[in-house]
Amino acid sequence: MRFEGVHHVTCITGDAPGNVTFYTGVMGLRLVKKTINQDDPTVYHLFYADEHGSPGADITFFEYPGASSGRAGDGMVHTITFRVGSEEALDFWESRLATHGVTTSRRDGTLRFDDPERLGLELAVSATGDAPLVARHPDIPSELALQGFDGVRAYASDPERSRALLEQVLGFSPRGADAWGVRGADRGGSYAYDAPPADLGVPGAGTVHHVAWASTMEDHAAWQRRVTEAGMRATPAIDRFWFRSVYFREPSGVLFELATLGPGFAVDEELEHLGETLVLPPTFEHRRTEVEKILTPLPDPRAGWAG
Ligand code: ZN
Image 1: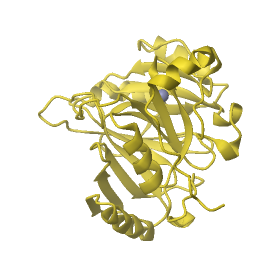
Image 2: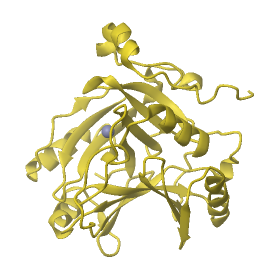
Image 3: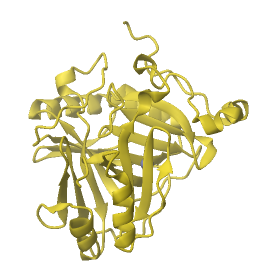
Image 4: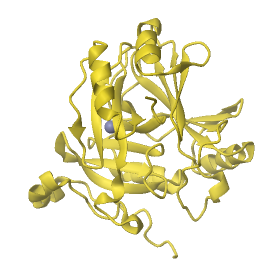
């Protein structure tokens, strides 16, 4: 059993409208699902991805309106890395982000910057042959667009605490000091630790809530058993409607999810109309009127697009 790289990364925003504007308008991702946090149906859960809403390209945000800003610390993911196709793509993004007032720093095939809530993002020239997972945007040529995740970097004061779990239980392969790769039949991803800052982490806007690794449908139950047998306090498989999920905190403190590749976002919306309306899982549909009254109205990211 091997994970097909990163499935999704879930973060926290205090400003859903600003979040939509940045991730669709600036970064060029597609809003593929506008729904609610299934553990707190009074707030949004927004999913941005490639044109098809593919696992591997899916950055998601829980909205807590007006949440104070957080800060990554020990046991938290601090940087999310997306792939791009070339150094020319980094040139493009360096210039595009500057135009949008985003300060970047470029080094060794990567471009590092923060989103408007100071979430750490990085673009890296892809060193894999994995299929590019690309969204359409009128101002971003597809060969320069984001191509899905490479991986995440977290802070850990003692990465050795996680090594046995990562390598012997989860099938991650060492790739240099405190860094690992994980590769399935179609896609791969990366995971790495850096020494934490002195200040403690604070969950809040602009921080990562969890990272999900992609499991095939067939392997999912076996992964749940395997991590439980390894001593992790894993949840049972939870039906998230678009995928199934198991959660546990790995020994360094990062919340991991194991999520299935299917059935996917097109089970309840046509591909052409993903993300356009508020979608509620069937078990929440009876609360639609109540929920719609509470949620902050959001712009349609593709309003005014020709074609
Ligand atoms: Zn998740």
